[in-house]
Length: 110
Image (cartoon, rainbow, N blue to C red):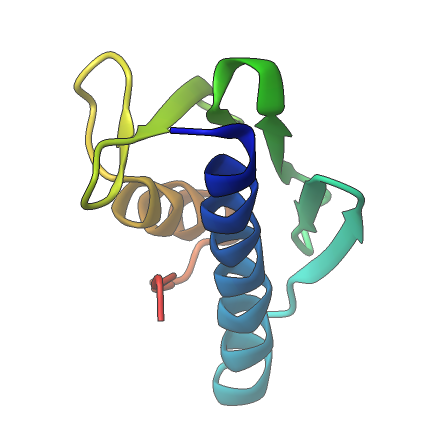
């Protein structure tokens, strides 16, 4: 994958995270404050916990830091998968955000 291809796919991922936050804020009582700075999105929850997602362009990876730990994702041609076999990005983000917010939340690529 070229740098340009990585950035295109990674930007779509970050936009999907932001869109999911907007949907969650509109459709539920959960309030997620999402802030974007360049290639990084920070999700802040009411209990003051955070999830940070940032792009690692030289490695062609997306990194996610949650209360339970840090994870690295690479695009495998179909989806963003954890480099240590832990699962798909949006499924894990949904799990981590649900744990940190105390409510069932769903993040999706679309």
